Length: 455
Image 1: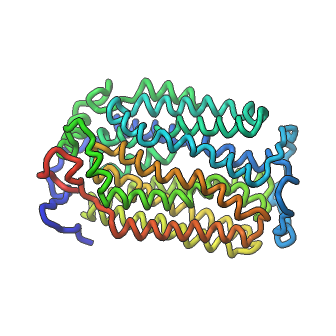
Image 2 (image 1 turned 180 degrees about the vertical axis):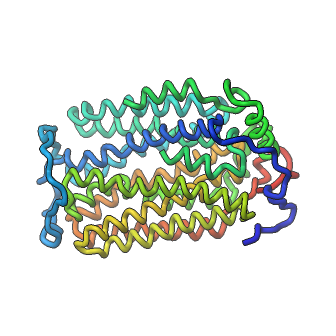
Image 3 (image 1 turned 90 degrees about the horizontal axis):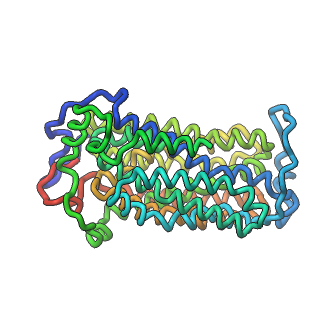
């Protein structure tokens, strides 16, 4: 497959490239690995309540009897190990549970654009570091808030979201200064694949810098390599070009794809433990492992797809836009197909788990698709762009769990099929929209001038 050709478009791959420096022990890969641990922690903090909630709620508080119990018998493939069952139980109905699961995102959406803007002005290191630190602290308060009342729990979860909302825009802003164009997929896929919170914070503050220029231990060769590879892609203008940015069709292609992908991602992230318990009838011990299995597959796919994406761009001369579109299509159409299929497996537990796992695993391709396309079209404003797209993409986290809980009052197979239909349809629409309107070129409004190399 040949790179796309167009007027005044010179693929970056054809430009003279600076001499590369080894990846092993380099400052940029150390940043990626430390970020990986940080984002691993973030997702653990975000999803822990979804797993815990299925055992925190009184079993008789559902609005109707679970009719699926008459279809699929309860089962367990493991020997039950005695465990602590003295934890507090709460009388929260399905609607209340939906609001609890969605409350995180009401804080999360507020700090997206401000986080990206602040990161572009003061750097992302402090924002990301204190964002994770604050989220960790509020997570420690979750049991106390639950005992005080559902209103307190919702407030604490919203505050967690408030702190976590700055993290992705801050990281994207840092990568605009750290990631050479032909290593973007690899570096970002590693970084986003991820009481530890406080320990991680000290390592982050000591070892990480906002830019290569301010890093204390980076080699001269690596600093020169990174800066020379980015010299024609960054803007020197101090003001943000808000108007051309907001009317940019490639940006809206990312918005639609990000929103669509997150509808499925957040639906499963918050409700997969409930589906495992109420439909597939797994006990609490199996539920924790099986609910994590799809995300382990996604993590592996994120790492591998990043390597493949940059290999195709660097070695096989695939255009950036071709790679981004293909990986987004795989990462959104594939999950839609297998998610719908999971709703028709009946009581075949192994097949249902396999389909959900494959669906979530394939979603990992999107990390090297639309997810890092912000850096392709406007490296200087990548943090702000991610703040914009993630603001829209947070809406599914706010309304998705509420809608899904309202659709599954009786926890029947038919009700969950409807949840999967909605998620799959939105996924397909986002994939098609991105394939039609996405770009792999640095946009004119994103640079100081129009004569620049394209990637």
